[in-house]
Amino acid sequence: MASRIQPQPSQSQANGQRSLQPAAQPLQESTAIIQVIERAALNPEVDIDKMERLLQMQERVLDRQALMAYSAAMAAMQTELPSIAERGQGNNGAYATLEDIVDTVRPIMQKHGFAVSFRIQTQERGIQITGVLMHQEGHREETSMLLPADTSGNKNAVQAFGSSTSYGKRYVLCALLNITTRGQDDNGQAAAPVKLVTPFQAGQIRQLIAACPAATQEWFVGKYGEAEQVPRSDFDRLRASLHKRAQPDHQSH
Image (tube, rainbow, N blue to C red; front, side, top):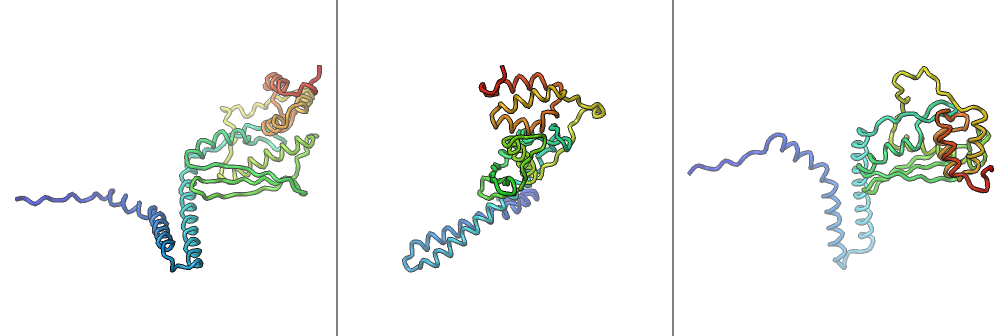
């Protein structure tokens, strides 16, 4: 009877098996430590100090496992994050708005198990913006930025706070995700300057903004910076939108 020859794994299969071993090692190590702890918990002769040391060892293993998962997910996400177009206009030139950044990166972050949150603290020296990037496996990284209140353009206290907060969130988020920005693609029309609103139109916008809720003021500052920076083509649509959001007691009749 002819002997049956067992098929040998291909080179790619062998490489695939070897590549899985390092990734599985932290999980195997964590499982082994949990089993040791379970056995120790059933042993009445094991003292409390030894149990605490075992629990600390397990915590270190889980932290390392979470860090490895974070690093792997971050490396994969970096290949998908695009450069953000700079569509906002301010005193220092064009910039990528917070809305554009968030709308672009949110689905990519969710795909790779990331979420971001912000902490806002008012201090004597200004406003501190802290961004926290969290991964679903438990590891997180954070970075902070301390900013003075932006009082340029005769902003009131609410507008100054909103402007600094929006600015800080943009730069903290870009730092956490290593995001780059670029000039907006205008099909070769960069030489044509954007026509801005007239001084009279800017005054109308300022009056409407002052009567709007703080959230609307923050949105406006993040998108345009100042009333004088609003493109003339946006004026009619923006004025109608702000008029709807303005508080009735502050609207002019």
